[in-house]
Amino acid sequence: MDKVEFRKCMVVLFTAYNREISKEVADVYYGYIKNFTIEELKFAIDDVIKKEKFFPSISTLLDSMVDDGVDESMIRADILKAISGFGRYKSPKFNHQISQAISEDIGWETMCNMSIEDLGTTIHFRYEKTHNAWINAKKNGTEFLTSPIKALFEVRNGRGNGFKKLGDINE
Image 1: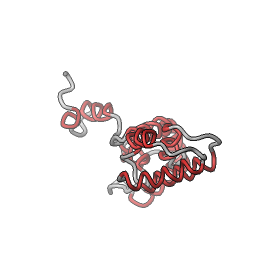
Image 2 (image 1 turned 30 degrees about the vertical axis):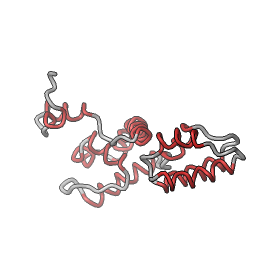
Image 3 (image 1 turned 120 degrees about the vertical axis):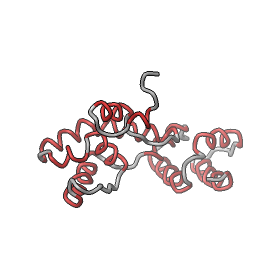
């Protein structure tokens, strides 16, 4: 997002909270928010105005920007849909990055061979950590990646080429 778009949104925010527009405050906010889209900022401002009584901190805005509304049941449904639609012999396509990360962590073939109950339990125990990692990556403006530990296990089990991803593990 560029500064002109950002400033228009900040005018709405300052006006909604009856605060005098401060270029310095807006510049500090911009430093933390500039990597998001203007749509994400508009959504966050709308959300914050509806929920917060006082002028929001940067952290409050960021929390609204990264709240994707994807809960564990949606991830479970996304993974089950991929299993039934693609099966173990095709590469799955997911609607959510969190589903993709959990699939990579567990292993696609392993997930396809699990009972529905075992799969639900396994997803449950991986969802919160994966979702938190996704939120932190979004807040920090970094790429959301699965754990590098997975690549290490893949190499040790003779599957994959984790060293290419991780570099020399002995470093």
